[in-house]
Image (tube, rainbow, N blue to C red; front, side):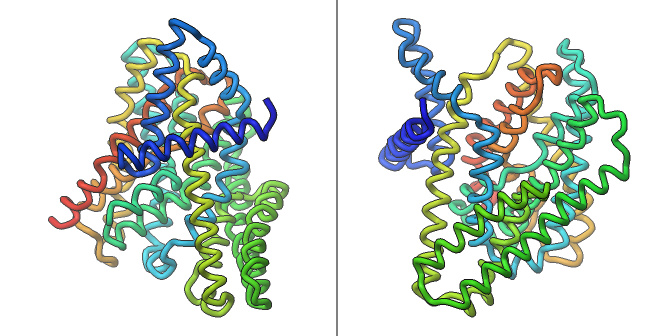
Length: 412
C-alpha cells in the first residue's frame, strides 16, 4: 500500500466520520472523531467473527503507518505552528511566568510522581516492573497534548486568563517532556554514563536552542512577509518556514516543536501582523492555517481511534489502565500546587484554577507516539495499553465535561 493510497483512505475516513459527527452526534470535532472511529473499529472486530476481510484490511492500513514518525516528525510542527499563530500573545506574555513553571517544574514533578505511584500500583496488581520503566511511563504521559487541548478549549468558552494558562502550558511542556523522556530512555537502555552535565547540555540544546531558533525563524519570516504584498506567495512563505524550519531543527538536534511554537507566536503577534501583512494576506494566512489545523486534527484522531488494533489486551493490563487514570489526575493536581501558590498573589487567577487545569490537562497523540517508541524490554505492550486507555478517557471523558466544569468552578 503506497503513501498516496494510505493518505487517501485516512482523508476519506476523516471526511466521512467528520460528516457523521456534524450531522448526528454534534460533538467537538476531536471527541466525535475518536468516538466514531473507535465504534467503527469495534464493529470491524465484531464482523470479523463472520468474515475477517475488512479487519485484515484495517490491520494492514495501521501496520503501514509509522504513527510515531508521522506525528512527531511531520504533523506536530504544522499543528503547533497553527495553534501558536492564533494564540493571544499579549495574554501569554502576561502569564509567561506561571506557564514556564507549569511547563518545566510541573512536568518534572508529575513525571516523578506518576513514576512512583505507578511502580507501587503495578506491584499491588501483580506486575513487577522496574522503577526506571515506570519513570519512563511518567515522562511520556505527563505532558498535556496541545493538539487535544486547543481543539476542545476553542469550543468551551473558558475565561481568557485560564485558557491562556492551559494552552500556553500545553504548547511548551511537550518540548520539555520529550527531553525528559529521551533522557530517561537512554538511562533505561543502559546508559550508565548519563550525567547531570549531559542532561543540562541536552536541555539547553533542545529547549533553549529550539526557542532561539524559533525566534530567528519567526524574524526571517516576518522580514520576508513585510518586504512584499502578494498573499499567495506569503502563504507559501509560512508553509516553507514550518517545513524548512522543522528539517533544520531536526538536523541540528533542536526541539522542532518548541521552534514552531515560538515562530508561530512571533508571526501571529498583533504588532508583527499589522506591520507585515495586508488585511487580505492576513485573512488568507489565517484561513489556510485554520484549515490545515482542522484537516490534520481529523486525520490524527482517526489514527488514534484505529490504534486500538495494535494493542495487546489482558485483564492485568486493563486493570492497570483503569487504576492509572485517578493516580495520574492526582499527580497532575499535586504538580500544579506549588506554581499556582507562587503566582496566585502576583497574578489574578480564576477560582479553582488547580482543579480546572487538572481536569483540562488532556493527553493525546503525543503520549501514544512516545509509548510506541518503547522497546519490548521496556514493557511496551503494558504501557501502550495504559497510555491508550488514559488518552481515550482524557479526550472523551474529560473533554466532554471540561466545559461544564469550567463554567461551574470558575465563577465560584
